[in-house]
Image 1 (spheres, one colour):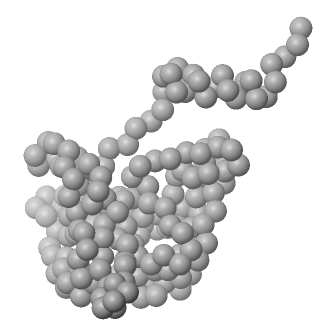
Image 2: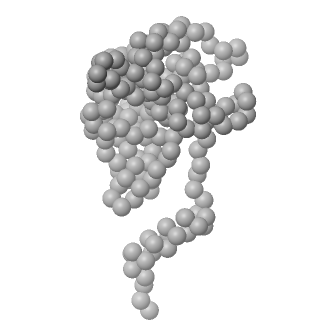
Image 3: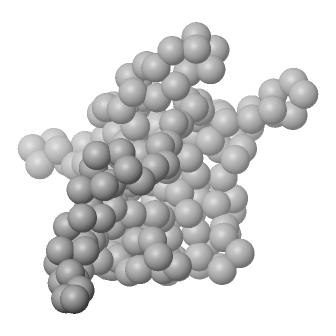
Length: 192
């Protein structure tokens, strides 16, 4: 008896996954405000992406993104950091997680970072903790947009999904708000 080819087995596996035969985990983010992000992060930095590569680790795809730290706003990250996040493309395998930020070389942003046991970092609350910096070619003004500003995120206060976040905020105003967030006391009961 002839065994099915590798392509036939992979096709069957993909059809099972697409048809619900294999449970795939879902992710729901709870909205965090700037004060909560500032408290949760080990470091906050303005960064420039220098490289991104995906790989398979323990049967799952993950992405390592290299950044040069342009400016440290909180903590003491080294001048070059590696951010590890789930998902990415490795060969013919694509794992896409909506809430996980992806970066291309040359992109700049402000990241709220959490130190991992490996010495690398992760982005605090994924898309909530990633802010892209864009420069107006005509005026030179830099603005900040939160990755989650176009996503529906669960708001625990209203118990509904909402689409909100920071969009096209002048960088100077973002810095002012961030400075206030760093000085804000912890919420009652120690909750973020």
